[in-house]
Length: 472
Image 1: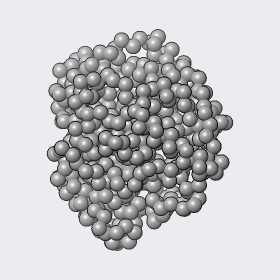
Image 2: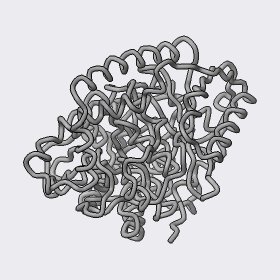
Image 3: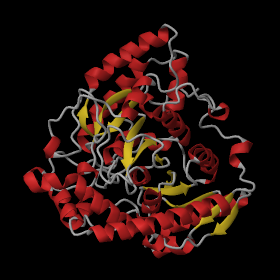
Image 4: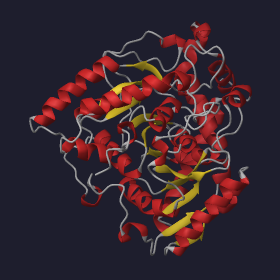
């Protein structure tokens, strides 16, 4: 059990769940602490588009009564979370960070929103994102862009940016996100969090605004791998499921079986990864992590994946073509309701031809099959940096919205393989660095287990991201 001098907003889900289960902490106290934290810092960070404090307090009071009556539902009961504003929420406006939907209130919930509510999670609101999960921040956006809690002059990643900000700043203990080209893993990397994109199709997209349906994934952002396990199981609807070695009272601890890596086959696509421009400090940290893995018994295997060099271009082609199909009616009928960042993206996307799209699809299917063969026959997991560069300033992003960012994330969105980012220490700039893991299709639980074991190889204090120091 954590010391009570730990701020409540800094607790992990596992820690808070144990305190709530034993009634040493009430959901009302936890929600009040998160709301107070957001009251103090939200004006500087813009994590939320819509806050639902009144409803959250009422739900927290109800959860407190239920648990006092012996009706504890599980580790998400009474836990404060938030939802990316492309997930539909019944009775709560869902804007996709766009003027086009500024006042739209759905009459239904996304399926994963329903499942988290059934598990007892309490939503504190809807988080900022990039417009329709496709645009980029611009000066004419109807809502301010989210900022990075480690340094508010910097961007918190795309496009689940507000979710990354909210979890890292301690406004909530976890948040949902969507990932079409890296948009869960990218903000997790930028904000010092765990970002998990499960196998494509494992989590339902029902009630989630589509961008590129063949590549869209629902994902999650948390402060630890153990918390990602708990969120993932709730989002899958596994309320009765229990993992003996992932029970709430043991999450976050280390044991010999978790820290040793004997026989683990770690693949590194060294040539392809190095072909992307990398910050030298990030690459040096990545090499140190690989050395630690080898020291703990893992086998490192260089992997050459044919076609991987084309992954970014293929992903961008598919996202562009499908994204334009989803959003073209806004461009045609009411372009004035779209921000500059999204209009620029859509102008470029409109140039992708059906022939470009189908050729990219063929190459994508070939690459997906080749990668699955590597992950089932050659290695257990592939590792890479989770982001090639420290997060740039928000001004730099606005002035160069088309710059290449987080290319390492595109491959697994393209192929649908489960992928996860972990904090990998702090850069000399004071901003987080990250490691990315990926494994075979439908090995989601195994990937989370591997991530738990690999945490011991990383230079990171797992309790630190909950309390980043705001800088001017």
